[in-house]
Image (cartoon, rainbow, N blue to C red; front, side, top):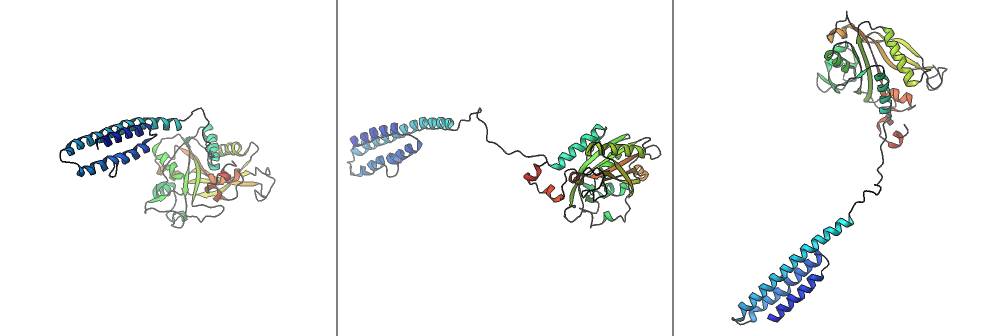
Length: 339
């Protein structure tokens, strides 16, 4: 039995040295040291030995077991290091090779139009003002001289969160916040998202975008308003563009008006795009109502100003001849890449 144990050790040493990986080493551990392994079987047969032989053979068997375990552990460390090295070689990244191509996105047409409009007004000395989309009823209606019975205050038009909080229906509250936090002169534009309880169709959406402007200073006149918007229209739609102002009513401006531009498709001659009128409506405007100035802490006997606002989605649709507002929010990259 002593010779058999020595033969097992010699055989195990050869096989362990020849093993090609960690899996083969684990198989050899089971073969020699497992519950049904070679060394275990030898130890189970010790019952056939004499009482004098058992201690001697038991010591030799334990020595063989420990020797095989030492050989396995040493080889395992070598094989593990070699496998890690081979794995690193297999998974090495060649930084000089071109990477996998990732599809690039594209700027949304609303952002294209917004960036162009912002650039125009920044060139005229305006600054950008921002405000929260969740607004107070006071900032959205009361401070803007809107009467209590104004239709826009109803649940059918406005999304109420509480009795005093709403999703803003316009970016005009940004003007209120600006007038309350800054002293004149003020010259800002206020872009942002707005929300109204509208049914979705080709020209309406419960979420849309606006960009408004506000100028407050001494000696501001209607001529300043008309000159500013005429320059804006020419920069956005082309130098040949003409503007036309029509009387209108807004509770926060007096006098108020709507602005049309000459059709940039037909040059004002009349076509399907402008419904054969030669003109396209683009925004509303007016001189800031004295009540609004006073409510915001500005002396209306010293300062006055003008305000204007336009639907950014509408301007985008006009500029790029898009006939359905819904495609602006479907995020189809095939559509967006056209702009």
